[in-house]
Image (cartoon, rainbow, N blue to C red; front, side):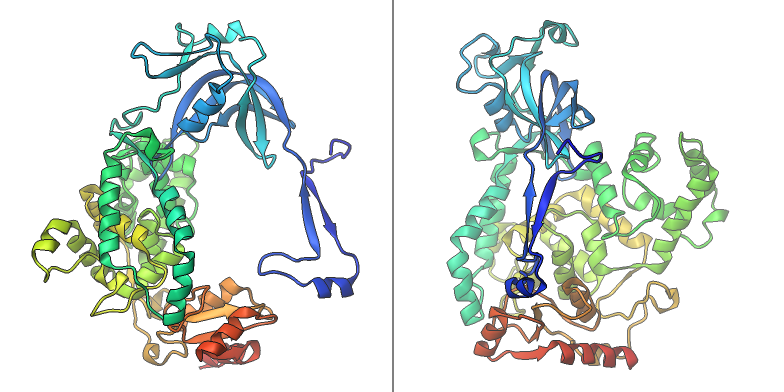
Length: 533
């Protein structure tokens, strides 16, 4: 590895014979005729100076080790992840530690370690620095102990309040709970596919929401390993920066020319606080005439690293997004609701069709309580359109975790106000609206052919390889042509299966269920016909 004039992190072994490659074939992700061999990560010994707490967009509090700088594969490492507080205690205290290098604090419960203890650091995948373990045999570096805190000790206890906003913190086992539930329901999911129904009722979802409310006020370290800030996302500055970066990302509002560091700079200078702030000032076609816009442009231009041209480019980018508009799915994604990614956003948008209906559903959810629903059977549970019932079919792909996250979002007044302000600040066009990003004149106008689109309202599954088109591109194409969803699994709810090369089990499964199957050529003809028309 070190004999090359350039850095490498592994080797790929390949079969040379083209004929043998054809025999081996490929999976949906990788060829079977090649295999990667990653080298073990490079590691080094250094000393622990301190531990800081880093706050992510979703509120996760991650302990980060501050290290005596050490060279690791040509990179100077001075910070490394400790993943979570349980992991930090496990590797820094350990069961073999019988010395006075780890001891309880005055209350007799908390653990602390001496500054300057020796640790082994590596770069995961030769990229991300992480602390692997403590070197118990090495002496403490006394020069490190003398830095910073005169006590010379580092507390390993998770904080009871968020270091950034002061809100209470709580352990969150939602991720592990989801994985456990998913594993326990594998067999059940196959039965659902066979009978075309889903037994997830709102009782399950309501129970899940109640459990999460209990978790929110729990400080029991046994309930989970990830600690989170429980305060409103947009009122905790590190989370707010992440939330606005998420909102302005390519998958969200797609605001060009603004980086995370620059957004943090704008927030630190109190120029913006919420995603809608820039749109409220620069979203109008003639923002140049606004004294408020001129004042903000001047403030941004005076910041280090900006200037008049950069501030003007940002304003133009905001105006472009506001005037051209975004699809409802990307607006939903931009809100940064936990468990709601790009695919879930598309499914929710397909269910509600327009932003007013979606915001109304959030408003209804904000006033819902399980107690009131038990007293009055006529009260609709929140997001009934998503989990189904007498009036609607369940949206496949939206589970209890996503719905409870939507309910939690709806109950935060700050988040709801920010969501409504953002909706008022830019155009959000409905589902099944003919939009061309390069032609602003078409935005907001319903397509006359929307009711006769070739895949209108259909659930389409792709299997195998399509010639000249990736699966993601094909899914986007059919969604634009009216498809309701493009899941990866087949059930009786599936309307169409597109079979590419080496379609395999999905094609056979579709034919057994009586689902229509078209080959790649027929599918491409449908696409070409729709484009020409």
